[in-house]
Length: 161
Image (cartoon, rainbow, N blue to C red; front, side):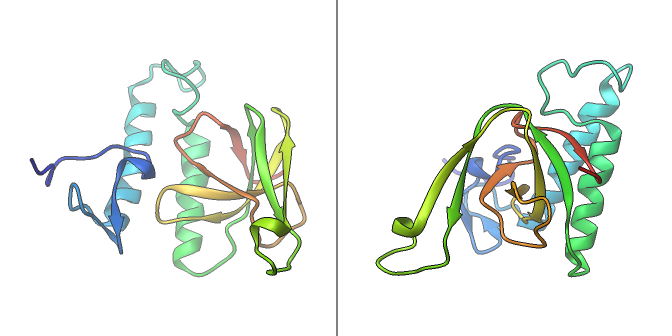
């Protein structure tokens, strides 16, 4: 039975993307990304005090975090750098590529686990509602892992390290 017209959910994994359209619900990625931000804002608006801890975990963003995410997407639309910083709430594995392609990219990629509490730089935001992160706080581009903005892995999204 087709789910067309129904939302699949907030996470990019809940959709089956072919090009820029979900094959399950028919939503365009640009509408979905906008709805993700709108849903985060709606959840935030339902809280009585923005400084209270979120009722269902850190996936609900503060007003400032939502504003930063919105600004990152605005900058992406203008083809400008999308740089911000976030603290991770749990260990994350970074995939660091050494630049060689042979015998394979996988063979030339080192996996490095960074501990919870580490500040990472956001160097990319995607149309799927996630961001690219690196532990190189001076990097202009090149991410080592991707994380959904609605994930509880990210906290304290901010403009400065």
